[in-house]
Amino acid sequence: MEIISVLIFIVGYLAIAFEHPIKINKTASALVTGVLVWVVFALVRGPHDLESLSHHLGSTSEILFFLLGAMTLVELVDAHQGFHFVSRLIKTKNPATMMWIVGLLTFFLSAVLDNLTTAIVMVTLLRKLVTDTSTRKYFVGVVVIAANAGGAWSPIGDVTTTMLWIGGQISAWGIVKSLFVPSVVSLLVPLSVAAFWVRKSHLGAIRQEKSMTNEEERHGRIMLFAGVLSLLGVPVFKTVTHLPPYMGILLALGLVWILSEFLHADKDEEAKKPYTVGHALTKIDTSSVLFFLGILLAIGALESFGYLGQLAAYLEASLGNQFFIVTVIGIASSVVDNVPLVAATMGMYPLTQFPTDHAMWEYLAFCAGTGGSILIIGSAAGVAVMGMEKIDFVWYAKRIGFLALLGYFAGAATYLLVH
Image (cartoon, rainbow, N blue to C red; front, side, top):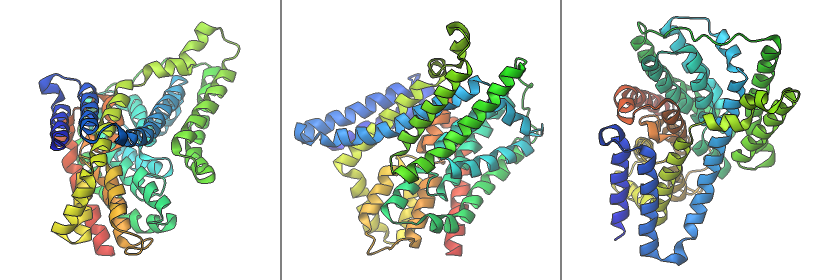
């Protein structure tokens, strides 16, 4: 009966992939899939084994709260037109040049913050710069690739890299030194092609924003500075306190919220409303958060059944070569969440076999981080922008997935050649 859970996951995954042809919202499919897989687990294993559900719900909630906090914080800064000042820095109207600027900016920002927050910030910025929706999709696709590539070479840039860092498999300087060049290559290959594709595209008419008073200009600058500083403080908060990242993002949101209240203390409730967190919460896409919940619940159930561990053991028995296995794991992370895959791999190989900063661990960090770009649901950044920009799964797979795959293999080949 356990195999039914796999069949449910496959059917649910297909329903998500073909959301538009079957006319069923992907969030509904994800939620039904996540719950039904756990129903099978409960019927097979019994109520005494349901402690694993609480465990997975705890880890899933950390991601969801981080997502909610980051999206709300970005919307709060945007409500004050904070990103208006960032968009002024990008003077070019050439689509190809803008593609290069956006890709490189996302890459380095992701390493400092994390790929999820960076993707949210950059999509918000792109809405100011590229009003033509068909063209903006290509830019958003490159943002996903750049955010994941930038997160792979930083110990705080991606959740899987952070797992390996905390687990002792990699060191902070070791991962930066070893993966920076492969990560750059994995970005430059798709970025070059994408810039060529959009060179004759139209960015759309410049979005006419309302004129800002001196006070609004000042508030916008203050909120932009506070928002960026608080986001930069999240990895520092985690490093100092060892608390999970969602605690840092909630603290950041709370502090920026208090600042916003001070800035508008002299306004009445009606005038203050557009600048409140309550209003910002109405603008974020909560359906994407629920979609993420459904997907992670389903993955958690499959992990509790032991299928992911069995898959890792099967790969070891059939393929043998660890680097080939890790390459396959990276591709699989575009379909299945990379967190349990990396966790299973960490369990397969003890540190006595592969010590800290061994090439296998570094290569795993790269593959798990960048492989998620191949499909839009393969990474937190992809899931977030999928909801924000309503990007179709099949469209991404056709237009962006191939570019991400090229970058993935180019970066992987670079690492293997160098090391």
